[in-house]
Image (cartoon, rainbow, N blue to C red; front, side, top):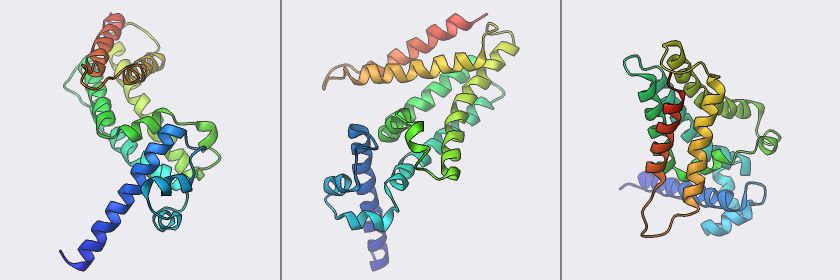
Length: 208
């Protein structure tokens, strides 16, 4: 490995170290209660080192949330646009994709699920704030589109698509939170199976 490759590798590892420490603290203490000093201490680096890679605490927060949220948004948009599968299958695929996102990047998931609009509206630039809002709304909208498709095809009851989508999302997030609080090492993990059963119950309830 050459000098430039080694430096790049060290930079990537340092950024990951900072991001992992920040994510853990944002989740544990909340955004406002976490300081750059806290993050530096957990990462075992100087405060100045963090500012070499991130302009501010809010810039660091945005770097944790936006990339993962963007990937999820594109996946859900693709699922909603599929032509050859039923709305019920699409809902299952949306659930699976969101659960995989949660497993792959739980820190980003938790930060998104605890998003505080009143706090971040005063901290993020208008452009970044609008982008985050767009991604979050887009994810809910994809499920709303799928529910609307089911209604239009006569497969689902004539319900409010947006409210039905909100019920799906809140059920998903509620199960994650409930089960996480009860996870014990070595015990059976009921998160996935509980989510699958809950989605089946909701779908059964909205079928025409």
